[in-house]
Length: 269
Image (cartoon, rainbow, N blue to C red; front, side, top):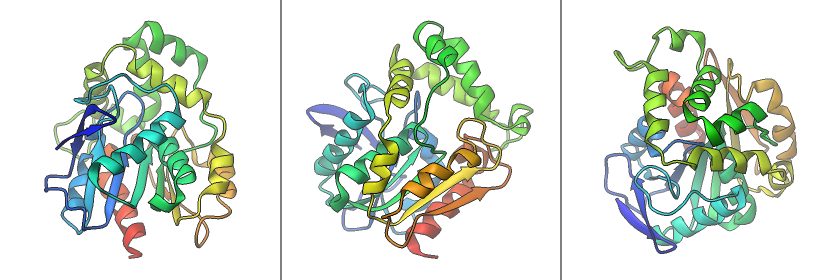
């Protein structure tokens, strides 16, 4: 569906069902240089199992208008504006990579609106390697190749896929090419500049789950520990789970495991 968020047209995927704000709402926030389509599998599952799903294209991404926002804090404020536009008071916030920082900051800034928090492929801080920042600004194909190299496991590079016939690194390249000029560079710069992640984590009050890929090279499980330990005030204590064999792009490499983790956490199943 299409909404106007802060007077800007915004494309929001709802998982193949009409959005029902009377159901528990889940907001799925994509990462740098991506759009809502990275959430296709969990979005459809959740929408057909009792949730109202909002998977937006962030400003300047996918089919949404406007320019890419320059900071994680601005994106967190935009998520609150999205909830207003959808008529939703509270929602579970789920984010991947850059989207996880947006979800984290939104849960800290608007605790009354965060029913739960799921951080997928997340660390804080999330510094970006200078060669990648440089490539994103001036050589997008090189940046896309670097991201693919670090996002997928060797098996995925050789053709392993949960979707038969779909070469995952190739599909990710096409997705990143589809974004406008400057979008990836702005996203990565926002991640690199965001330094208050651990402070924000201390302000989170809702139940929180961190989902890690065992073979994630961009946000490896060993680097998640400071963020987990900073979530000292999360209701019931923050939890961390590791998906065996998954890389950073775990929603496409292991979609069933990621979906089970999110749904299981949100339903206490």
